[in-house]
Image 1 (tube, rainbow, N blue to C red):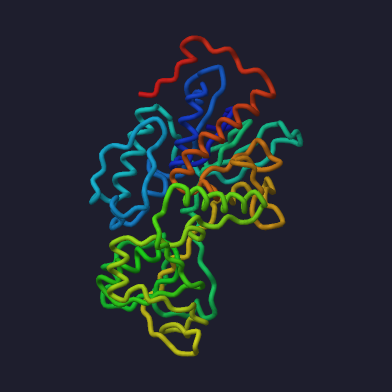
Image 2: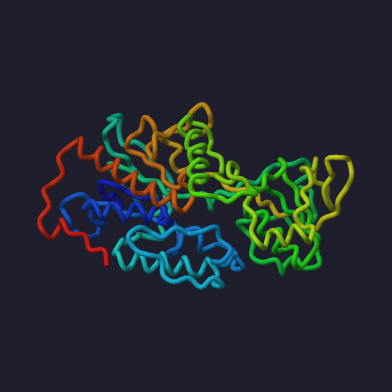
Length: 377
């Protein structure tokens, strides 16, 4: 793999990365290993196999309880068993998709740094990995957030004698039986796990802000409006907010049942952590054995640090999927495209924009009859 050259390099093979690979194939790009003399692409993935972040979801997250998974582009999702673990179904679905479309994902490869090859704004980017380096004219970053869990810092946290874990490390509720579990966070994962854990042991729920529950139906227009608000933030170079922070929490039958059991009684955030529990905002004390931080994730973009893409606002200023001022770099699965539907659209948009940009620098080679046909079985 040392010093391979491609026209477009995709980092990450979750839903957004696979969408980008599909649309690259549709536009006549061929895999780097094909020996094709025209435009070439490669997809690097740090996972040991297909599935992206879904490989690591807790087994109790069934297909009936995930928030809706968009079909990968070009191939309809197979029939779903609502009782199957999402980690199993989606890993299989993604793997079949890669194989059937011949996307040739290179894994496991961890990207460590991306930097400019020289000062030419239309020059190449150098991508360093733990298996050598790549040179590319365009980059589609689809690394998601799963590898970068966010841990808040509270006074006394290091002295807690119980167990602390992030939702990224969660396996099952059964391991907490007989212990009092504090769940921290106001998002979908927090309330889902709160409901699950409360089935086997006692729980308490803490959030920084009062949760907002959505009583009306969540329509496609409501989803569009929520994504637009997140998109406006990244356009201004501000850190993206989660879509749920805009939409509010959506009632499901399981969560309504949890509310009737008294599980969804929210407490204001505690003031500090002590060895055997937490000091409450009103000065009281609550004993606890476990603190589960369901506090979300941040975009996994550390490898892009040498490019100095962040704006003074702390985020990355975006123009659609393109980094403003750096047309060689596109971020998919970032901000408004972090949902499954958004990821598909972002993959298509990134490829279309990059293809136009690459075409503006030099005319593409004329394809032969064989090269102009992309096999999408």
